[in-house]
Image (cartoon, rainbow, N blue to C red; front, top):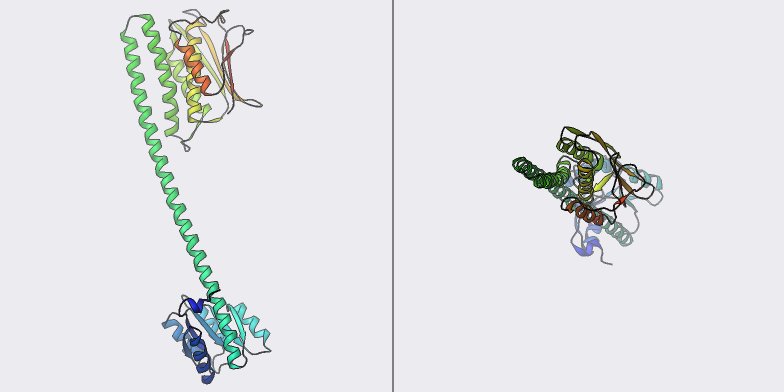
Length: 355
């Protein structure tokens, strides 16, 4: 394993009042690859450390005037304190513990010169390795934080753009629905009027999804209770039969669905409700249409029912039959089939699918 002192000339400050030992340490550690400066008092050492950045500092405990613990405290108070190795006598474990508590990274016991250089070099190498690993970890964490911040900014920007897209799509569909409504009012053929009203309902079902998406915090899912409430209100306003009014009652749980499933379910509701309003009751007869959407034990269930004249024995399409094809296609996209309850007094359509 290559030690830090072998990778680069690490800058060492050695503080000891023994000038002879300072020279021996300087000569011995320079042979080991360190760039060494010495100071023979605590104040001089603190001054040098404040003026010049050092990779590591070694401080002797016994110094006249200002001992090692005071010097250690002043070094630790510098704006960018270096890692510090504390030097003690052989029987001074109490002082070593005090130095570690005060901020020293490690300690070395003074001994014969060459042996001391070996011990000091090993402690310095370990201290530099720990500092290098800490810096690498801090740099990696900083890089990760910056990457996460960039990713969050990208996601937020995409969400804003997606809301804007949904806003524009909803506005465009609203314009198309208005044009279809105007066209239906302009034609005199009843079949054409009926087909245009059906088209308007289908457009409204899709438009309501995009309207909910651009006002929602989550642009990936749709709150079905909120969505169906808006859709039902729009259908009730637009679907009339002569002088009669169709009351559309909704009971829905706040289930969230992905956008594509919400669109399919909304189109099915629009078709079933439109058919009920057109065919369940006599032309000038008021009548209710009930829509229920809830979570069952194993699936999601949609029920659309009325108390009208009921379903014929054979489902012969009225008009173009496009409505039944649309219902079947949307149900297939949900991996389901719309079932009609033959025992219900009016008409009752049930759709169960996995949510």
